[in-house]
Image (cartoon, rainbow, N blue to C red; front, side, top):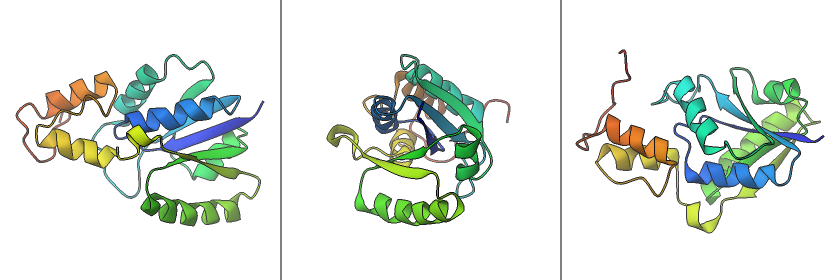
Length: 171
């Protein structure tokens, strides 16, 4: 069985993420979607539990996909799952520049784990989590860009299109 991991913050999951994961699920025997518990480079809008629930709902029909949270190096997460590959989606050239650097670092740390790039489908190649959040913050309709539960949650967080950081329940 060949396992691949698909790591990301998924804050929130978009139709672009779903596209890449579905296509990876058609290539590999098992795909483990790794949700970064606490990203180093940004503060997530959604708690990790909510990001996982969004993914579970969106990927429920894929029998060879699992979801797990990780807080270690991505290569250590790959080793934990005995993964042979890290799957990453590419949308634009700037994605490649960043991913090339990450690939070289990961390859130094774990030469036995290959990185596989999946080009985003044209209809979702422009979709990014940060773009979705910005559109929602200004009251825009993101329903064509994200799974329905994500669109509904963003509409709850920004009912009047108020820019800024939304409050999480309980805060």
